[in-house]
Image (cartoon, rainbow over all chains, first blue to last red; front, side):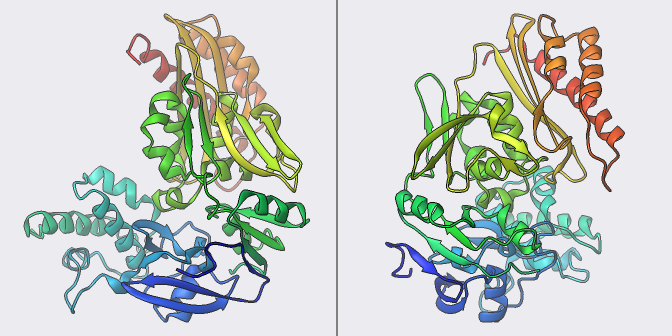
Length: 175
Length: 290
């Protein structure tokens, strides 16, 4: 957390320093104050797994997990994320092993062009970590803020249901 | 697109935030940013200074008075409203609005008060404020001001707030005995802005409606109540005859906009459908324990 937290932090349009934790690693980067969080992740930190679709909050492709909650990284300034803990798609796999949501999405053909996939998976991860016992109706509602232009919604829902089964009893639910 | 350049200040006291607003003609308050940042990314707005209030203490509180009035501070997110048992129990119509607002990721950042200050014509909270006679608590270096909802929403994205004022909180007065409320809307995709929506609060004495509030959103430049239709419901049980008359008056009063998502006539039709839907829902709750 930066030392500016206890006084008025002012950046007059120049650069500002952002200190936060990204995928478990403490980072400190200097970016222009108008930089969005998504651009900080993609350009300054070279974490290009977070995708940008609409850049005004409609498509959900840029969804990340910030302090445990799903947020649109295009609708946050980098400077607003000062002092936060961020997780992106790059942080899901551990030691070369996919997260259950990644494996299940793969098994259920949840990836088509996959542009939307990082946003869908980060939304799903935040949802399942909040409450892993989700019904299909709840999943459809919670993922309703993410768009897939391949329209592969059924296989994405199947993937999330598969991840729930995998996390519950090690059964990926593939027929 | 990306936001145009701006200066940024993140004060840690309310006083310094108010001084920044008083000293800059072209400053905007940034809380969750879920309305302001899209506006800036689309280059529809280019404030010279953003005053980020997110690190100011005490603004994130939900305060419940003994009589059931609820005051929601400027940093309370939609998600926090949605999750609050106090709001669900004392101001159910406010709780009913929350799940309709944006999508989860938007509700996690966006604030209830920010949505009111932004005054999008299709947003839910301004209509809920009108339906409940809420008070807006504005503050500035000049002092505090309480603005009734009926005087607050003045035009498309326009409110009674002065440039140097911060909307610090919204206060929902205690619900009258026998009040029931609901929020219904039609949207292309659940969570998107409504084509037409209605925040409806009815006060029942037994089966009889003694007070009615029909606050529409998405059908005009700002949220608006439809007094003639409200009057048609008062004194009735909300039966079919009363509903037919109310729906007729809703259609006769509203002058909705047309756009790519729907014609004016379609929105006018939806407004009537929503009136019927809301009143029928609230009638069916009559007699249930609250």
